[in-house]
Image: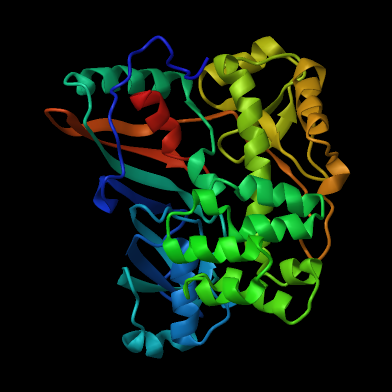
Length: 395
């Protein structure tokens, strides 16, 4: 089975033809208090990643990235609105801050720094083009099914980087294969479209680090950092572990995501049904518990109060029992890993957690339609991705 809505025909079509076709707006977890030592910037960006945006702000305001706060990472191939927090003492420099492909829409004060995950969810407005002529009818039926059964909680393609290798990079980190990590980090030339980047990757694979550095686009700061360390005679281990910790954790997180997506694919037809040994997650607060009374808890599943879960692997993660638990451990074993492998040095240890196999869908509706084009809007909880809905819609 490829889709939860296997029996419903898809709309067909394509999306992300322009940033305006894929709009994302954060839904704040709490309103700003209007006072405090932190300034929240409501920023609209297009064509750049959240990390690109943070880099511009740190350079422009002469800050370190740890001084900034953000609730989530937003897609580069989209028009997005998100909050970034900065220390209040930098507010006087905002007038001179020049952002590329981004603009500050408004500011407000708050008492605490914005933290990762401090958002309720995201609202999406997405245009799908080149659809079947009856796409609106098809989409409506699919959305009705997803609102009833929940949305498969896949991470999807955006989690795995521009070259699709973020999960592989994380696995190489876990296995401490720093030489191969460096090669993958610079990229596979066969997958790179940018001519300068492609040339740099080719030079690196031929062993010419100096030419690789000279060819690499200026904007690729982390890759340039790695090459400079290697040119200074540092080992691959030293060079890799000198990269920003949040970047390395992003790769480890992508590996967790990859394994989760594999387990979800195995369970796709039963994401709204409990099985012996399951660990359920409460949607209200994310709390996990082992299911002991299937009949009682299934009633709560039917009401989308709780859902069965799968692990984001880590050194301390809860593992299910029974058939579910066997699947979880078999997948890890097949990859040559154990839970202890997630204990890493330099603040990179991943304790792990449980993630629901599905999430509730809110406010889904078709807001406009033309011949072979529909625009829809919907909201998802934090940590969930619109591509999970689009894969069901478009098929």
